[in-house]
Length: 67
Image (cartoon, rainbow, N blue to C red):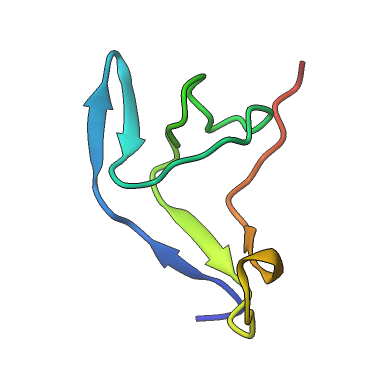
């Protein structure tokens, strides 16, 4: 499936925003960040598969918000 595998954990409602249950995100300049700590993407892709620590991983779903 390539370098990154998608993960869809199911989304829930938080106010008027849908977010992925169990995913916490602090990246406020991402278009999927809801202003709290929730991700509103339909699903996320995290990788690469050869990562050996959290510092090796990236969220491939990240898209920078235009401010």
